[in-house]
Length: 452
Image (cartoon, rainbow, N blue to C red; front, side, top):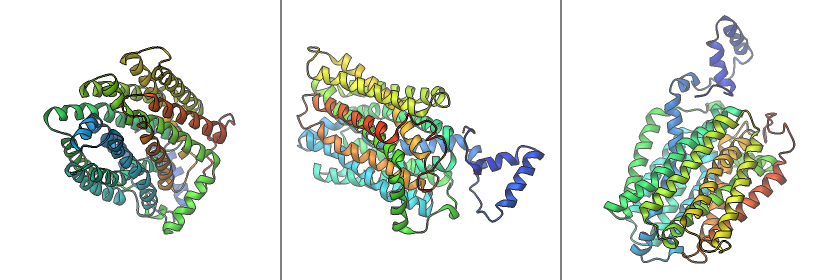
């Protein structure tokens, strides 16, 4: 794990390893904080840093795994369950809504009981719900089971972000979020490819069987290898009332709310693509499920590359606000191009220019999404679970609202997808400019915490 920007609990271990001078400094620190609670063994976290990073990446990969592996089978589900495309798209909306509201519950729980126990509970329920999805006899029950799957899967998303906030701050946190994007970005590359190949040997139910196996494997690894990062003394004991007060304090911070909403509406543009692209690529342009999976994977490669440019090149050299602004501008350009092409402004176009615009849109997400999270969490010193819950809930809830809108005109036009994407990113820009006020230099770098 990178050392720059580690929180004070990590610095305590670094002082112990720095020789006599470091030990003297550490002794002085111990004198003034003798009664402080013992922190988690961050030295052990350093020694197993790669494994912890992979575990957190696997947890953040839960949404793309649950969503994207299932995407190539949407037309088959429509035929198998004798349901219209708009109703089948509700299976995506239900899963997304579940992940949104589940984070509101799991986030405060992780602040009260620690990170690991709520995480394991959520993973077990996720496994059960995924099995039920594989057995669903009709689309109504499939929607219900997908809702339960999303509610339980929220634990992985919100707690992974909270663990990062436990361990990192500032630039190091932004870089770690970019690293997580690299790992979780592999999921949307591999998931549709796996989903497309599964459909060659079985039907859409086999996709949920594979998702069940992945959930079991992740649960076992978390149980044995992920350490607890929140000390008992740092946990909140006030129950629902304290959690609500913490969230109210976070929402009262204008900049935190601005980054939260900017990230949420940018995610809505992303989810409009996720929800509509199977029908746009396969129904409008006649591509096979395998071709769609390949194009989806290529677009995800763009997201991963942009995320790594953000984390390895830009962060620490360019302000996060500027990188976020560039990402939102690129999303706007791509969404505008898609709208013009889908309305026939350039005449009849093939799949290639549409795929190019989608590639730019997805790549720009690698600049926008990690920085909205990092900039928001930089303003939070306490209640990282509640802050993570608000970030995730806003993103998934706004995305869930955007999902059914892309299908209102049927499955043979891309206009609704482009309209939703453009409208969402314009609202994101308005929230970023109006609430965050990025021209006020030094505002996010001063370490002020919302509701401290």
